[in-house]
Image (cartoon, helix red, strand yellow):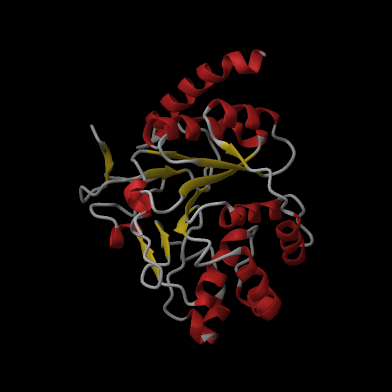
Length: 284
C-alpha cells in the first residue's frame, strides 16, 4: 500500500544528544521547512539530552522513551570495550517504532526535499531496503571474499536507509548475531566502525533486495556527501551534475564546522534560524 496514501504509518528517525545539538538544530530546522508533514522521532543516544528534548518538543518531534535494554545488551555483546561508541547501534531502535515504513538519518544531515514520495518506493519482496550512498571502504575486510553471500553485494553508508519493521527487525539482528557472531567479527572492518558493518552484514545475510535512491525514486540523485562537486542550487533544491534531485546532505566524517562547500551555506542558514528559535527556550 502507498505510504503517502493514508494506508500505512511512515516517519523519519534520528539519534541525538546534547553533544551533537549543533548538528541536531539545523537538521530540525530543515525538517520543519521540507518535511513537517511527516512524523519525526528523536531517539536519545544517552541521558545527556536536556537541550535535545527541548529542541524535539519545540519542533513537534516525538521523543522516544522506549526501553532499549535488549538493544544496548546486543551492542555490549558485540563491542564490550567501547561503552560510548557502541551506543551508535541505538539507530536500530528506528526498527521498533510504531511505523510501517521508516527513514533513518544520521543527525549530521540537512533535508532539501519532501520525502513522502520516497516512502512509496519501498516494495516488500522487490525493494526491501533503500540506501543513498555506497561505502566500499568502511564495511568489510578482505575476508569477505571467502563467503558466497557477501560476493557482489552493495556495501552502503548506513547514515540513510528506508525500510520496514515488517522486513527487518531488531529480532533479526539478535538472531543473526546468535548464529553468526564469529563470522561477523571475522569479516567486519575495524577502525572505530560499529553500526555500519553490522547493518550491512544483517541486510546481506538476510538477502534483502537493496536499491539506491536513484534506482527507485524518479529523478532522485544518490548524491548526499557534503564534499560533493558539480552541485547546482535551484529553486526546488540542489541537483547533482546530471541534474538529478538531491534529497539531503550528510556531513559524514566531517571534523570541522561547515563553511565553504556546496551545501554549507544552507547548513549555516538553518543553524542560525534554529538557534534564534531556540533562544527563548535556552533562557528559560
